Image (cartoon, rainbow, N blue to C red; front, side, top):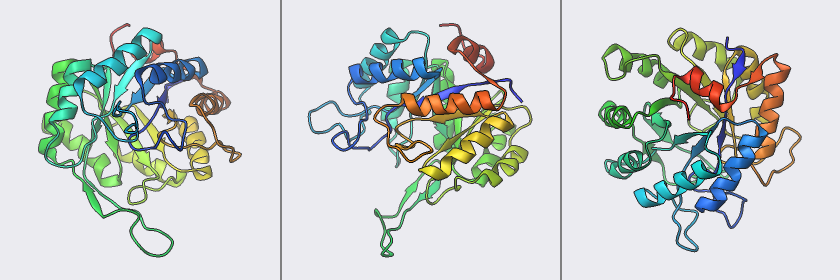
Length: 289
């Protein structure tokens, strides 16, 4: 168990409409939220990029110029923060995320480690959106890992289901990835693993021994007991406006900072210190800022 907890802020997410929620879109907004997250205890910021055209800020952007502008302004505002960049895209054309990695050379990036039927139903029994496959076959995973090796980026293996956790070890066994993988157990996606603390011992049993891990928890009140248990079991912590808008008491936040402050409280209540960015870099084997 690590005596220090690394806290990641999932600063904005992929599709949340800024006309409805206080999510940052522009480079300046991202930088301001990154600073708030850092001041609250985050050492890592997980970032998605949005289209910058007025009225289009709810849509993702894979324009390398947009990605570089956002990352440059965030790094200028808070140089010590670790940038963890999204790569998730559906379909066979994923050149955009690869180009963004090459443009920004982030310290970390998500590596979606397996495919998932991405489904959700409404209370009336209809689909919330057309059923889709979030496709992450091994060849696609390898392409991302190869570019991350080229850019000096540490992959964070996103695991949406139990079988995907097992796949990560196979990537190591076959030489697709060399080193101790960093796991991110994503819980709360409707068709993936539920946000349930009882799953954590199973996931820890299945991951590679001594490999670092964190949980990403999507939802409302049900996520907070799992955050607390993650802290108690030695995992690293993540929250932010991508994952939830709600604190344990049900109040809605308008910034990432209160969510990060809550995670820091859970870490300290579990007897752990909150890692600084410098400490997080050392723990993850990253270069000094």
